[in-house]
Length: 112
Image (cartoon, rainbow, N blue to C red; front, side, top):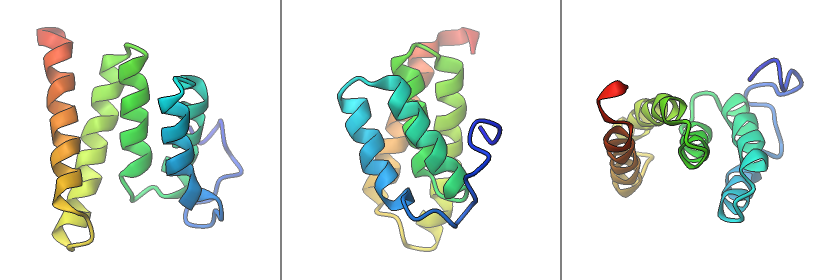
């Protein structure tokens, strides 16, 4: 991802607060390539946050790239746990991410 967006500096982007909503809008419109690009930028701009990774997991799931979807879903859950631990993440969000991850595991079957 870094090679695609070398201009993105962690924690220095002014637009990153809008990227989550922009990515979801693109995802809802089934503009998967646009959503992927937006979520990649978000993950690079906020590397400790889970949103970009969760968005990428959803994109890759829709594209049928289950191995990548699982990888990013796992990372989103891992990063989200830090926010749960410090009390800054609504537990419902974590439940949703874990349910999505579980769904991916069922879709991927025993091969992954």
